[in-house]
Length: 157
Image 1: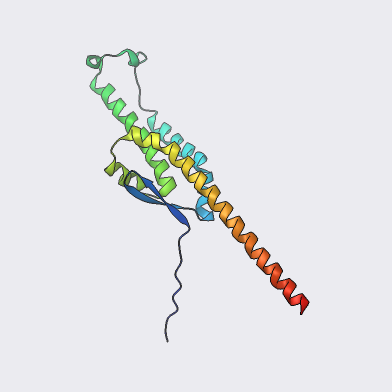
Image 2 (image 1 turned 90 degrees about the vertical axis):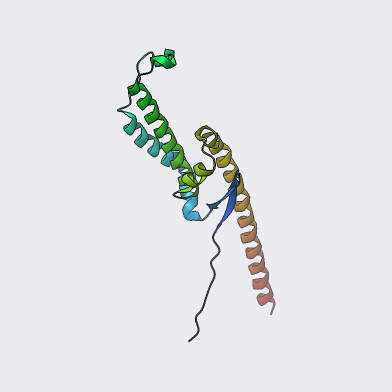
């Protein structure tokens, strides 16, 4: 008995970040996540804030000179930076799948640049989704039109 093989084409589109090409899944299931990204990101931020509760900076921390920093202050700054990095990583992973941030950060180890890129990435993806939705709507309209023409042709017989 021979097998039947049906190929499935993933719904989505490539997104190029620097020289890395990622895939944005535009399936209905993933779009729900995309449109809830603010909510999901806020949940991740809340988790990060809970982790950060143990981080304490002196009241006059901004007025410190480099020689004023204690080892504890430096550890607190490092912990705060790690939490910010974790929050940014979560956003990339929500958009493109788990492990994406590690892949990007390995190529571009600049957390500030990666954080700044999030907003333009989100806007570009939203615009592409609008284009795809317009194409889908046009395709459905065309199918409806063809079906109506076939129905009219059958009624004439």
